[in-house]
Length: 137
Image (cartoon, rainbow, N blue to C red; front, top):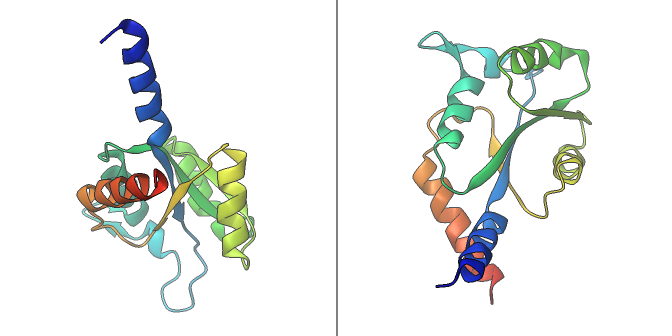
C-alpha cells in the first residue's frame, strides 16, 4: 500500500465516524434534574458521556439541551466538566437535535438518551457499523 492509499483509507475511516448527540433536559414531571442525579458520586450524564467516549466510532459527543432556565444547572455542569453542549428548543426535540448536528457540521448523528447510564459502547459501535454498511449500498 502506498502512502497515498493509506492516507485515503484513514480519511475514509474518519469520515465514517458519527457524532453522538445526547438528548438531555432537566424539567421532567416525574423526576426533575434526573440527568444530574448521582450514581456512585457522579451525575447520570457523566456516566452516559463516559460510556460513549469508549466507542471506537464516535467522533464527537454533544449534549443537546434546551434554552429553558431549568437547564441552566445542567449547562453549568457541562461547562465545568468540558463536555460539548448545544442549547435549542425545549418542545421541538427533533429541531434541537438537527440544529445541534448542523452547528457541528455533522451529516449523520446518533441520538442517545441522557438517562441511559448503562448504554454499552459495543452496541453503539455495532449500530454505527450497520449504518455504514447500509450507507454504502
